Length: 483
Ligand code: GUN
Ligand code: FE
Image (cartoon, rainbow, N blue to C red):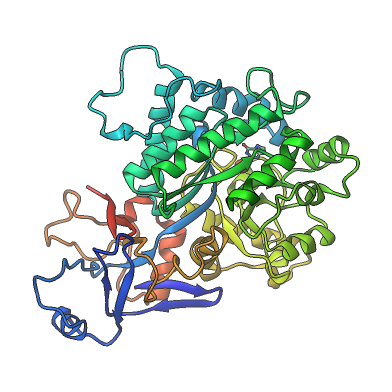
């Protein structure tokens, strides 16, 4: 069992873990770090053989806490890798708004009567030949994105959907059926000067009504909200009217909901916010004034914040999603992660598909390391900016857990935490003892045998991908198995 409980603490433990299969959550009930074999472990747990299902880590691998992607746009997945030479604002109008508008009918609840359904269990297969309707496009894209993220070890994701209420509800249903822990946000945007006519709400009234419909659907789907829960999602300040932001702030506060949005990603965006909200001190103040900066708020990017803004965010205890692949792809800038951490902020990682080109949080860990070094270079070669593999993995797990309000419940192997776990395999031992033909769960990171576990983890982070993820569990339920 390998985990990163601290920024400089890679914990490597051998032993056994007992996970409850009856509490409805998949909670870790007991751990044993002394047992030498299954028999010892069973004795220590006061169990008999046959009482439990046993899952063993392969000799060439380990269990690692599932990754938490705190910022991803599910409807943008078809555009992953497609961004040309654009930067944020022209990328939105050229690539993103047209795609999002095509994923689900953007009118009110057009294709559902508001009753939770399980679309992936439907016996009506996805129509192959007919021209896709907006909702069938949503089904195709959302099924794919949840499958892809799970197979990359993402056990929890905070999703932006689109304006479409039925398609957003569908995303929640698919996540629920597949068993991914997911926060689902119906995107709110209604500013007539910044949103295209084909993709926006007309009035704050409508925006709030549609957001509320989607929240209520998701809460009916999962009343406890432990697996799937709604998240209030103003796209970003420029796309919302001031009244809308304020009313979304109220909505989040009266219903005690999570919030997610973008902040200070691009210099042109920051200027646009100053133009659109001249009465506010800065970008952060726009959200703060609307009551949107809460301890349950995830702010993506946070690249160009002033010291004053960082201190406001710290006071509100709002969270940061660092999206390095997107920041590099769209040329948005260097996020000063070290400075944010030093200011006491909780920071996590996001793929930001499709500003980011990859659904893999492992790739976000790599990009976090690389960008931190470039930032050190432009700051006179100061090493303090550097983020290494362990700290990157800590951001991807413990950091993510804190940012989605699951601190202490996700991200590690402690008693009381949930079994949201990926089984990572490298490529040393041929599990079925054959000549390596066929797929017996091997990954594709070459291990020569003399590397210690820390070095193996380094090699996994720099060279691994979804081929190294053999099994994935969420809340104790097996949700992906590589075949
Ligand atoms: N700002 C507003 N909308 C978006 C989006 O979809 N992606 C990114 N990266 N930034 C945004
Ligand atoms: Fe984004």
